Image (cartoon, rainbow, N blue to C red; front, side):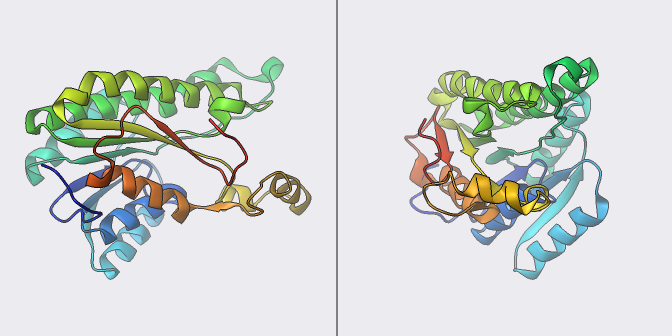
Length: 253
């Protein structure tokens, strides 16, 4: 099922953590390219409804899928039902993620396990369920949202850094497993991206970060969404097992 451009018409995409921030931008961008987009979320009903409404106002089609990615049974059921109802699943974007920051001496075991469960294990569950559908159709695009922190680390984020580094290692292994089924698996590792969380930082802290970015600006959720669109399209058919670093020159992988 080769694709010649960025047109995703007729394809079905699932974006986890798709109701806000980077996930929301990805869902809207894939919809604008013609994909039917299932927006996964776990808690914020109002944010999810707003995202779906904006998607539909833009002429797109999609739906909301509420389930926790760290629950194996619910992931399997949701993806199986979506693919059965739509007849396919072409694109999976593993974007769902959380942080529970704390220095090593004070990090609670439950915070370590919670971050790994959502960020890494949840992505594995979604990949496992989606790959079953994609293998049967011999086509698919799996995209993982990693982070610069998975490469450079950050004090107080041992759990988050480990989860993101694990995602990139998983990406390479799954790419090898699935390449002969015409399924690509790639990761995007954003650097400093303007979101609700980063905008809440003190101005001095934000400026210190910006001063270290060669491009002189923070990234946007739309910057990430553009790279995801490329990876979801036929233009990236020969690209697999890679991590694309999107950080304005802050880090070269």
